[in-house]
Length: 185
Image 1 (cartoon, rainbow, N blue to C red):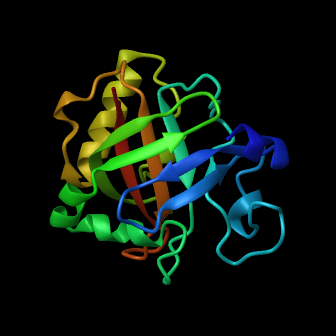
Image 2 (image 1 turned 90 degrees about the vertical axis):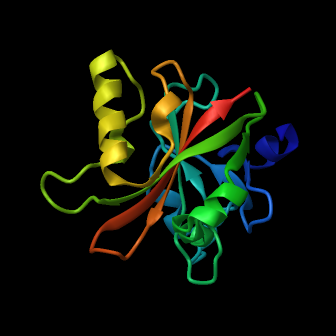
C-alpha cells in the first residue's frame, strides 16, 4: 500500500469483503463531497470512489471509521450492500477487511441498519466518530439498535474499534443503509 499511497497521496486504504464486488481502494480528502463523482485519479466518474470520512484519522483510528460509497444499480462501489438486508447473506459475508499502510484490520459485522437522515429528529449515525463519554457511546448504541434490521451488538463495548460502511437506500427519501462492524483480533 505504500506504493499506492505514494502514487495517490489521498489513498487511505483498501477494503475487501470475500465473495463480493467489494475489493476496492478507499480515498480520503478534507472534503467529503470530492470523491462522490471522481475516481481515484480525480477524473470524473459517475460511480465515484469509496472514501473515508474527512473527520477520521486512519493513522490513529478513533472509535468509528466511516467509509462512504454510492449504491450503484450495477452493484459497483457499495451497490452490493443491499444484499445484507438478507440474514442468510449476512451470515455468509460477515467479515470485512480494511487495511491501511499502517495496519491490517479485520472486522465482524454487528449490525445492518436503515436510517432516514433527511427529517428533523432523524438519526444521523455518520456524526458518531469518537466516543468521548460512556453516555455518548450508550446513545450511539441505542440508536443503532433502534434502526437495526439485524442486531448483533450485544457484545459491543466503548473500547471497541468500529467500522461503518454507509450508502444511500431508497426505502424512504434521504434513506441510508449502513453496516456497523467491530474490529476483531
